[in-house]
Length: 167
Image (cartoon, rainbow, N blue to C red; front, side):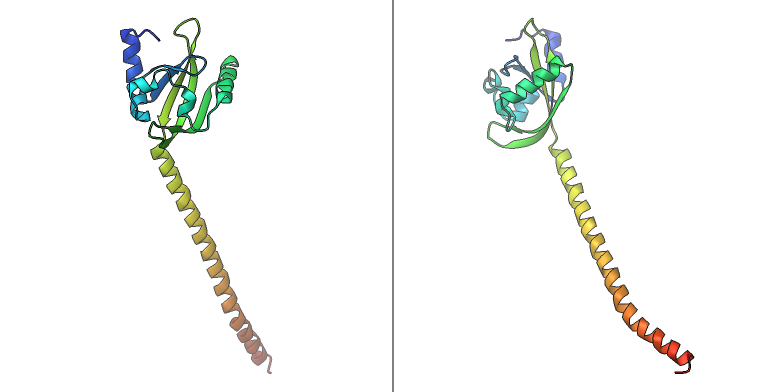
């Protein structure tokens, strides 16, 4: 387990996001209090657990992709649903980077709950769909009214033209 200096502990606990630090195999070795809150569990349940169990649908290929990105000096950002102890889920952005607390190195997962953003995005998409439906209905109405007016107007134009022509 990571040795915690006072500065390290202050930094870890001050981070807004849930922070989960794992060994290179994905076993959780450290975390902040936000992680405990997000996952609705006790500290004893997080320590030693696999990070893969907290990300819905994650498997070993995710860790392989993360390690490959780190080798290529690329940042990893995952949009996923995280799984709480009670099996409920929440939408999250998970940023992953490498941290070297010892010679083996560790993975650092920053988990941000984006539930509010997701609800706002869903509401915006729903409003956009309704606006598109309204626009289609308006266009159909204008088309129908135009057609309905054109028919009698055409007859009237012919009648006036005939009268002007002396018929």
